Structures are given as structure tokens and as C-alpha cells.
Length: 166
Image 1 (cartoon, helix red, strand yellow):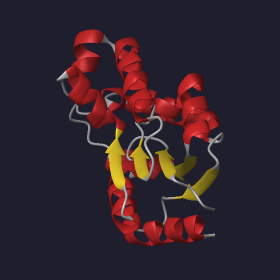
Image 2 (image 1 turned 120 degrees about the vertical axis):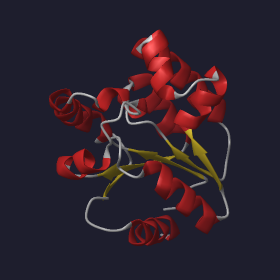
Image 3 (image 1 turned 120 degrees about the horizontal axis):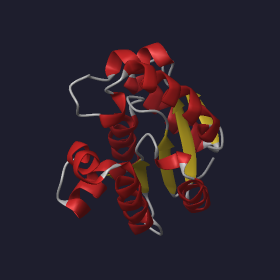
């Protein structure tokens, strides 16, 4: 599947940033992280944006950071866990490039996410589990779904390279 741009979507801790960097390196493309782009725009870490301004403000900043990437080619974009849930963001992503859902099981997400406050939506484990199940319906709108919970990042990058080569 030929593409000039790839968006990695999926739940927090799915490995989107790690895979984006590794895949971009293999392709000779840029790696872009939407959360990092929001932090640059706002001059604050994501957790502080949530604490000071709330989630709706963060989502607005996230949409702006995503819009800034439209038209950029030869890039692998790691989205935030909630980016693809927003219908407007999802439409932009699916129109601009190839969306790939890195699907991980809930137990893997729970094991990977620290409960130290760096991930504001992961502080309460019950809410985390509800959020996981609620977001899966949105992720199913990605062009491709890849099981990202059963293999290491190197094998996953190889799988994505194979997908992109065909």
C-alpha cells in the first residue's frame, strides 16, 4: 500500500511515538508527535495543559497542531490517544494520509502507563478502562488495524514496512 504519509492512531501506551520514530527512520521520513507539537504551541507539558486549562482546551490545541501537519509529506505522525476520536480530526487524518491503528490489549496498556500523573486521563484505573473501551469504536475507522500487543517494536516496524511496500 503506497502512502506518502502515515498516521499512527490508537490508545495511550500503544507505542505510537516509538514506532513513528523507528518507522520514519526506516523510510527516511520525518517523525512528528502531535503531543509534542501541542507542547511546543502551548509552551507547557500536556499534563499542565490539562491541569490549567482542561481537556476541551487541550483538544482545541491538539486540532490546531494536527492542522499544522496537513500537507506535509513523507512523515510518520504519532497522534495522541484521543486525537482520532474526534470526528473532525479523524476526517482530516483519513483524507491526508494512511491511518494505522496500533491495537493493544487493555492489560498491556495498563502495564505500560505510569500512574504518576504524566498521563492525566490514566490517573483513575476504572476511568482508564472505560476510556479504552469507548475509544475502540473510533479507532476502527482507521484504514488499517495492526495487532501491536503481541510483538516487539522491531517486528512491528517490519510488519508496517511490508504493508507499505505492497
